[in-house]
Length: 187
Image (cartoon, rainbow, N blue to C red; front, side, top):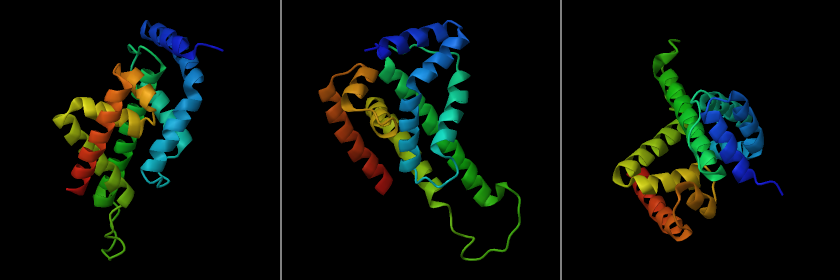
């Protein structure tokens, strides 16, 4: 069996040191994980058709590739970083759709009850982002757990590895984070 966690860590370090080829090998190594994470993001945000799983992975590839590397102690922390990048992409798409609904695309149409409906998926994504921002201001550690579990689709043990905390801390934090997010979304 190949030690993929060690490979991911080594490739991430080489990429941070300026080896662009290492980035491509790194992405090849985790591509299926990235597709799984992207699929979860698209599904959880309503899958409105604006962006599909493959497009999200490719957008994330471009965004992540421009960062020039980072310091990830293992596979789970790198995937959590990628998941966060995907979340930001979806939020940017939702904001763009909201701006277009408010006239950002500059096409003038008559106001009818049908045209006044706001895109629910975009609103949901932005509300969730706002709730996560609220949670981050209240308890940054819980926000990181929520990002890994909800957005990244990481298991409890993967989240613990990514954040370098115990699995029991993740379980307790995840329960609290869900309660806080539910409270913020209900408000």
